Image (cartoon, rainbow, N blue to C red; front, side):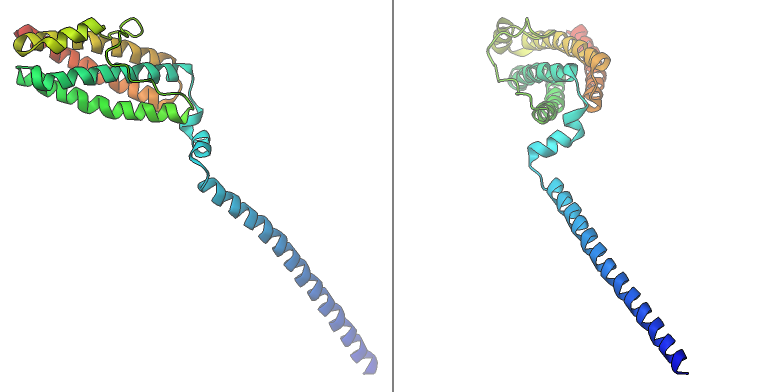
Length: 217
């Protein structure tokens, strides 16, 4: 009986020692894991609260783009700005309600697109095109009006303004469609290509509408 009790005590001591070892190992593992987990959590927190520049660099908009995407945005922004300037003139100089409605729609579509493209350029670390109202940029992009064209449009009014506006805006839209088709063929960034496709669709439709209005005059 004494030998049996001694054996039982020895077995209990061994089991207790083993359990203690397991607990200590578990605590050590938990501490290490907790530290790693805590570190991972902290890294996650840092990622989610990182600076805008870091976030932009890691975002899709900062990555999957190419030179064609950058060129499209840099050229289409001033192109759109001029279209908006022309549309603004129509609000006070046009005689036709159809022309005024068209001008309002053009401005309503292109103003937000300017903001969108500006956001892309910023996220790509590219400078935004400067405001260059009054300067002649007709040689740089297809469909752009010259400084002389804009001066004539500013001096027009009534039916004469309507005809001039429609003729110039048809040419302007044709240039935008050409630029957008180049982006569709050569660009890489999905949202930029989608915008280019939307430009082709909307402005092709508006060209048809403007040509019909010109035929009425």
